[in-house]
Length: 102
Image (cartoon, rainbow, N blue to C red; front, top):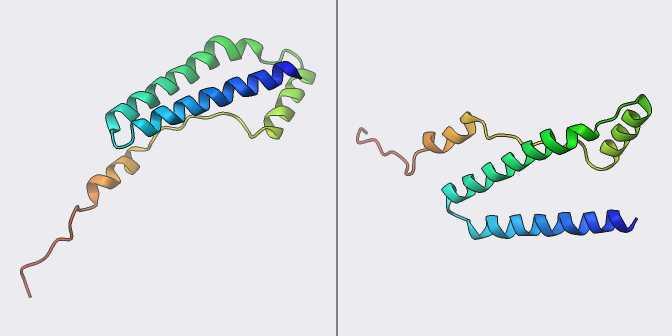
């Protein structure tokens, strides 16, 4: 129980630091993109190098893991922005176009 509480405290501290950093980068797309790249890299490294070795070896362990995932908010996922969403800003004119024709 104490270990779980410390883990939650550590995770909250990390979340607050990341949020504070992101807030300080507000308006700087390049810096925010760099932060997102770091988070994605960490996600991939933790998943591939640490988490996968803890995956269940038995059906009982698998059931317990799935039950825990369902109870605690689902599987973690870092989605990528779709190109179409990125292009939306380019397709919207900055100012309304006025036609010179009547």
